[in-house]
Amino acid sequence: MIKKNSMKLTFLSFSENESFARSTIACFSLQLNPSISEISDIKTAVSEAVTNSIVHAYPNSLGEISIEATIENNSIHINIEDNGVGIKDLSKALEPFYTTKAEDERSGMGFTIMKSFMDEVNVVSNEGEGTKIYMKKTIKTDA
Image (cartoon, rainbow, N blue to C red; front, side):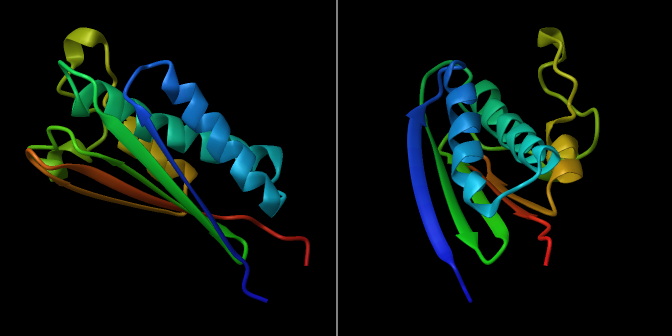
């Protein structure tokens, strides 16, 4: 049986909204009956993606970040999008430890963390046009 359900959330790039986004996706994913470890993985990946948008997409202003999530079968599909400054060199940004904010003690591990906790991660970004991050996590079932 194919089960589809979706949600959409849009919020301003205030740092306080990172925990709101993380909690909202965690609650939405509960219908898949994830383990504590799986829900922690999802929350961590969403936290990293949203924090990237807050810190990098809108460096000197506020902007909108949107999250769309769909549940299909035993997987959650998450899209996080901003309309910020975009990523100048995406291949470089995807490398572990690469950061443009070393002075702010950023580790440059955001995308690496997302990839380690999710089954799929895809990033599309164009300078001046924003960034879209797609993530997928399949929840293990007892069947």
